[in-house]
Image (cartoon, rainbow, N blue to C red; front, side, top):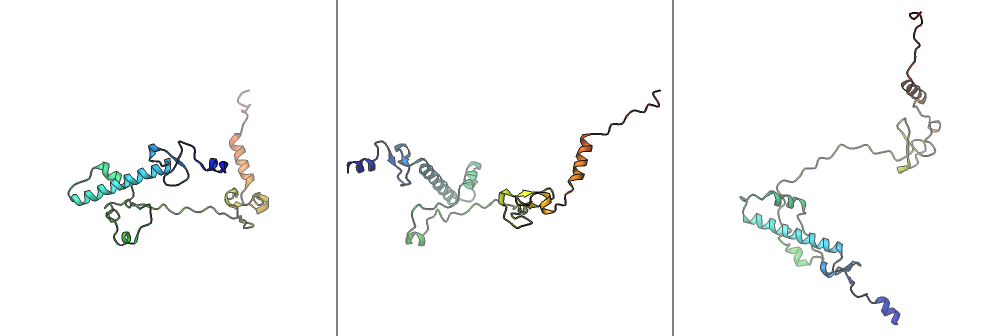
Length: 182
């Protein structure tokens, strides 16, 4: 019985996180672990920036926001979600933070042209190759069995490529003519 109490008792100085995530918190971080404290700070920052945005929109459209506040509004999401499940009255009467207008200028994301997907099957046996597929010099992907040129009837001319490589590496040496020297 004493052993059970010893195992279940927490050591002094260690406090579990207030969010019950399983990690230890500290009094300096409001009894939260580092991750929960960071999330808490981000939520507070988002709430304050949303409040500031609502106040700015209510103050008047003629006031121009400074560049520092504009970049901060674009970097944070517009909606702040509550941590607990909303009650039925909250669903009927949403908070003014959720109704805050989005910025007039939204960034336009241009999709890049579709990139051809790497074939994931061997051309000969249709076996899935995934990341271990071998791309032959003829440009086709094969499995480990059919990767050799003899196995898949490769159309790439290895002899011509070898000849070209040798001629580039070894220039032709011509002997000087002896007729003009004598």
